[in-house]
Length: 252
Ligand SMILES: NC(=O)c1ccc[n+]([C@@H]2O[C@H](COP(=O)([O-])OP(=O)(O)OC[C@H]3O[C@@H](n4cnc5c(N)ncnc54)[C@H](OP(=O)(O)O)[C@@H]3O)[C@@H](O)[C@H]2O)c1
Image 1 (cartoon, helix red, strand yellow):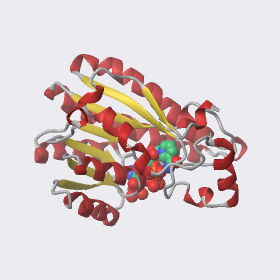
Image 2 (spheres, protein in one colour; image 1 turned 135 degrees about the vertical axis):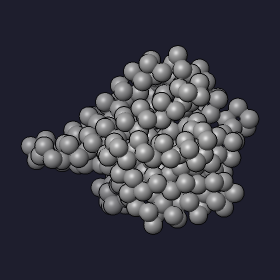
Image 3 (cartoon, rainbow, N blue to C red; image 1 turned 90 degrees about the vertical axis):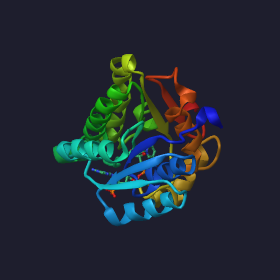
Image 4 (cartoon, rainbow, N blue to C red; image 1 turned 180 degrees about the horizontal axis):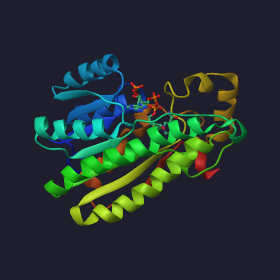
């Protein structure tokens, strides 16, 4: 396991109050990292922190809306001061929006872009500044298979994730001289608050049966291996890449 070790590292996970972010934050703690976790909901973050501390790891809670860039900068500053280092960023916070383009208002578009793209970009920028000083770092952007494969109703969400993938590639180029690896993980359908209602419906079950070759929706645990790979030294020669974890959906 040494190759995939995150022991002694400090990781910031955005959107760690539930779902995929909470799961990955707890897994990083299980494998020896200290955490800084953020979202807008302090009570839910406290529950994540409780589970992190069960692994005897430190956890700083940051109640921050990632669309507020000053607050993001201050959070990263505090993380650096209080932890003394910042090795890993998982840019996970995000929101879904499903509506046809004719029903898509400019405010819907801005809300999705702001959370899924702008927030991730400026969080990466703030962390990369700290990582440059240290001469190393790992940034993992949680995109989506929507970035790569179009589906009706997903215009804003898919555009935000496609832009995040392209941002990942450019950041990888710009920060390679500083030994910062930047990669994207593209999950398929994973059961969380974001889509539980759909996946547990009859239409959702039919969608899974027809379109996911491995014949089930994902669970947050299905992303653990890929995420650990992309934030550990196992991926030291991997940058600007996009790893799809989707039960085979995208090969159909
Ligand atoms: N579930 C899937 O099938 C799937 C598939 C592909 C990609 N993804 C991506 O995976 C990531 C996590 O999704 P999930 O399924 O775990 O969704 P989720 O259960 O709805 O969790 C979303 C997380 O993002 C946080 N968040 C949203 N907007 C935020 C903001 N402005 N500032 C700070 N935190 C914010 C939420 O925290 P608060 O509400 O507490 O602020 C929450 O912790 C997202 O980027 C999503 O697009 C999910």
